[in-house]
Image: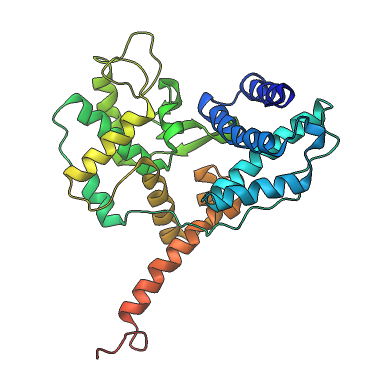
Length: 301
């Protein structure tokens, strides 16, 4: 493997960590995708970045497809290659971006999975007999009440929560801050948890949600606890934190039909991201139509 190619990737990954301040998880993802590109370059005898051309990148994408990689994964790999090429252009090692015009196969658009209102009510109606149960209920009520991402909820500090005003201040994607309302059930659950938190949290820990070690909760614990509560409540499907956000958005849109308001509450930069929930709403309406309209009902044989 050419040391020149490896050095270019290492400098790029270092810039992601130190200049763009990307998380370790995200930077590692770039590293895995670019390792595949380095393997391809080695097999093709490419020793310098300036010899990488558009046909090479197309061939790399085609190879990924032949090896069973899905459209979304190929899109992600090409995105990593484009980011690397832009960095190398800035560094003077490339004159132009050979990946700029290379397209991955189109992925089928996956609709988010949401719980219906009855299933959500069933999930949230559980007794909290211990401190961790109180915490878990506050987490789930807040997820559903305010449509937070998992990272947003776990990033909340005590100063971000205003129970009197019934709002939380959230740091979303792109370090954008937004204020979102908190419903009465979530306010009650949060109030109870904050009373219990005092006995659990380390004295210097600012996080709203902490674990048994007194420190800020990690995502895996929340995922496992929610899945366990869903099983305990008899829900037939796997429930994960983002399902609360999907349910929040689809239920709100069902009732209000105000796409722009839902966009603001979710913190979406582009309304096209929010529009996926209109498809969920249409599916709901279609089911009602099929079940209710005389001309829609299928005749029994």
